[in-house]
Amino acid sequence: MTTKPVLILGGTGKTGRRLAERLTARNIPVRIGSRAGTPPFDWLDKETWGPSLEGVGAVYISYYPDIAVPGAAETVEAFARLAVERGVRRLVLLSGRGEPEAQRAEEMLKASGADWSILRCAWFSQNFSEGFLIESILEGEVALPVGNVGEPFVDVDDIADVAATVLTEPGHIGQLYELTGPRLLSFSDAVAEIGKAAGRDIRYRQISHAEFTEAVAAHNLPPEFAWLLDELFTKVLDGRNEALADGVQRALGRQPKDFSAYATETAASGVWSN
Image 1: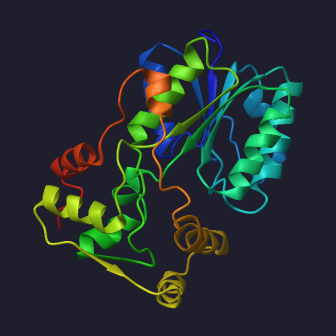
Image 2 (image 1 turned 90 degrees about the vertical axis):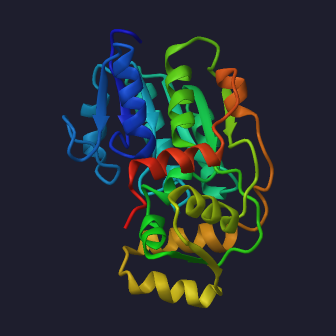
């Protein structure tokens, strides 16, 4: 592990980029799995999988665009089996809570013969600052088809800390860590905390499913992204994940970062200033 590189699929994304920083700081070599990587990796081109696996000791699997999309489970299964065939058994999967396709991918990973660990995550706090919601924050209004449902937003830094730990320390093979923040917040609560931290008037407005669908269509997103947003905001956010979990505590021996700390730190960076 300490001499062979870790292949980080999605290595330029929210969790992958942070994981690469943490492993590099521990003098563990990394290989960034992306279409711009060396060698390039593309989930849609299986010919790129083998060269990316050559000589690596472990893989962090972050599926693009999201593990909730149809067909993701079968693709993850095919990759996991190829990795095991090539002698790369240590696989860590980034998964999602309450998403049927994600849970299917977890079961397929377990059946692949890999030495697996699963990080099943709540909504990322950073979706408000590094994802599509930042545009709404800057405009001063976040409009979503979500009511007073509590979500235990998890900080991406915590996810990266857990991933680095399970990849470099013993005792984590065969473990499923469900990663959440320390408290439940509605989207209205979260937006209010961001507004307070940023010193701005940022409103939250609940809209209908039809209004949301129309707004998504206006952005001309690829079909899989439009489907994903509809799935996450109109189905997964139905209260099924309205519970805290102790994955961060179990993996790291500390409490997860609170959303207010994320909001304060992010506001200080100026990303929400307009």
